[in-house]
Length: 132
Length: 289
Image (tube, rainbow over all chains, first blue to last red):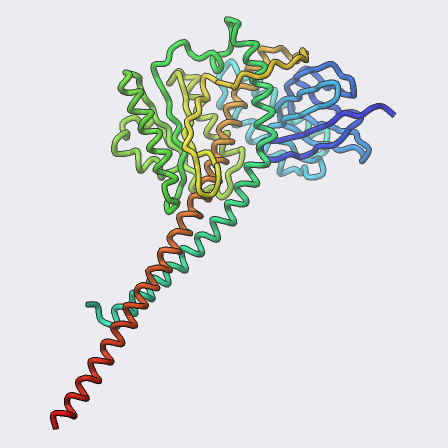
């Protein structure tokens, strides 16, 4: 059994999770990564996607819409702009997220346009992956 | 000398007022609890955000291409004051203390020859500032329809501020709000958000890897940090507002009680006087016979 690391998931409004996890899969901006005990200290931004935490209690999944993660050898803190447990995901939630991302993309400055459109696509991809 | 009937009506109306203030106090107490919980729940995020930001920014502020949100525009001619107040009154000095602080700040900046722009959040502050500073208003965010302050509201304010910054409308932005200390004490606070200022972090020994890059992360996080600061301010403000209202209504309830006591004594006295007068009239009438 591998060692554990302290996993904290916080959104601006509340703390969603604080458990000892054996591994945490996070949707990093440059690609997915899995953090386990002894990971090199890393700070990465997140893209919209599914975050999975494997702990003694089982696997918990959350949909996150962006933010960043701070990984050290013994802990990982994920600061997500919005995090929703996968069980609570519904089509309506996605509709809201999409509407918000699209309106941002429409209002974005030309140089930010690509990023905003990527955001929309990421959310669409996440929707496809979770089957809503 | 008011008549007995007048006194009776007066007592009745003060009793009604007391009922209302008492109810308001209890509502404020319940809301305060919720507001405090919300502020408490938001703390871990804000703290971590600040600690990461201070680490990142102290590393980046030396370099020449530090983002403008961090380094500033290079001048400090135009100041944006974001004055956050309540949507409702009847909360003691809550709104006035914020407005007073903002007013002092604005006057000082104007005396220094700087340009002042004011963005108001909450209509009470807008009303109070309108007379002296109406010409400096650049915008207003209305939360009168909002029941519970959420991160979405903070994002609305932050986006407004950031888009103004992107368009070069101002150089320095400062938030004005009340920091919640206790039910009886709220501290009016001015906090500069742009260019970002973070307390110097104790240099963390761990050298982080950054993905995508240090600058990329910083550019991504700075707007979020602004939103987080606005959110913290909004929550502090919400808790302060309820705390201030609670103590103001507590005072009002007590004053109403005192007033009822005074009026009741006065009422009893004049009733007694009327009875005595009638008796004297009867007795002296009987004696005259």
